[in-house]
Length: 83
Image (cartoon, rainbow, N blue to C red; front, side, top):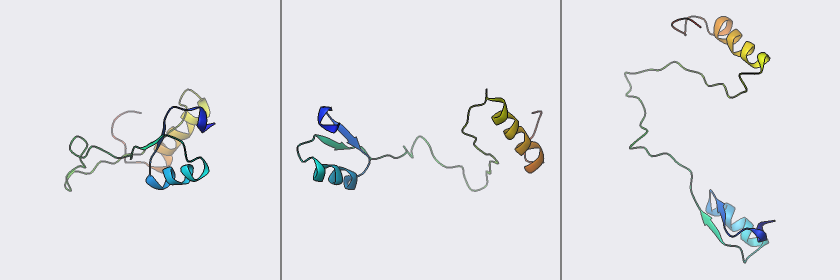
């Protein structure tokens, strides 16, 4: 399937090398993942954010219920304001 592509992108040189061992003629560029630390810098030590991330489908009622249960029962006192 890779032979049909004009260009492949990998995240690491090692990944590029593994693919080239299988198919040496492919055009592959390494595009390392990372973060612009000038634009996205960590909070100073004296600033603490209490947060949790949920990656799911909120319109699916059982997922929304699970998040609300977690916030209200498992993590009480961490959330300010109305939920």
